[in-house]
Image (cartoon, rainbow, N blue to C red; front, side):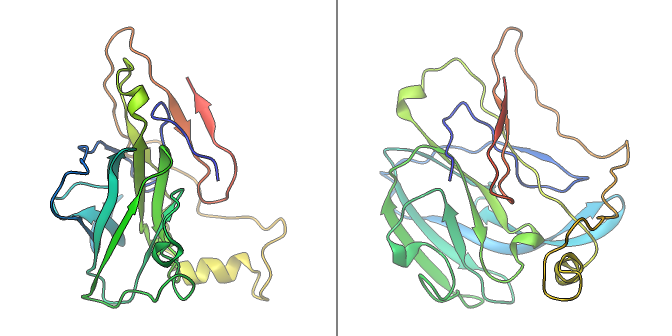
Amino acid sequence: MTSFSRRALIAAAAASSLSSTLVWPRFGSAAAEPIDLEVETRVLDIAGRAYDADRIVQSSGADGLSFDLSDSFDIRLHNKLDEPTLLHWHGLTPPWRQDGVPDLSQKALPPGQTYDYAFPLTSAGTHWMHSHQGLQEQALLAAPLIVRDPAEADLDEQEVVIMLQDVTFKPAEQWLEDLRGGHGAMMQGTDMDSMDMPPDSDTAMMSMSEGQDMMMEMDGQHDGSDSTSFP
């Protein structure tokens, strides 16, 4: 698992034809109550077609999570889906009972239920959170999880966090079956159709000041590959 400093940008959430620029407020460890984090379903408009997608959102409406390294990870997870779910905090080192892997660290959280997580943060970087329940991650159930290093707080840089994810109108279960070639094995040189992007696809615009530095990073989160930085 490769972690990155505050200088890094993450690539991960919105569709091939949909991308969004996400910026979150910071949270201090002095907060009296845990941050309410909700897992819910929303409908996206992609090229004029409705797409049912899951998402991770704070009760305030903010996407993703952002901390300083000195903060405590104090979260109350609410399952607002109509099926069990659970979130894994990818890149963090929680007690194993709070690692968020169904049937390994804990049971999946039933619909309408909540679960509290509380542990110290030990690693600054560009992390992410996602579901390990079934194919929920393929339904966009993932979000950035940023832990900033206080030593970099005074850097004269603009921070922009972007998540990119693939969207397909073919059911995720059918994709998995196709990738296995119908016989339980992963594809070997099989073509993947329907991957072309139209030239008028939605894009996110980021404003920068003249002479300002920006570090952009594309993170191979889904295949476990190393990230590539673009200064």
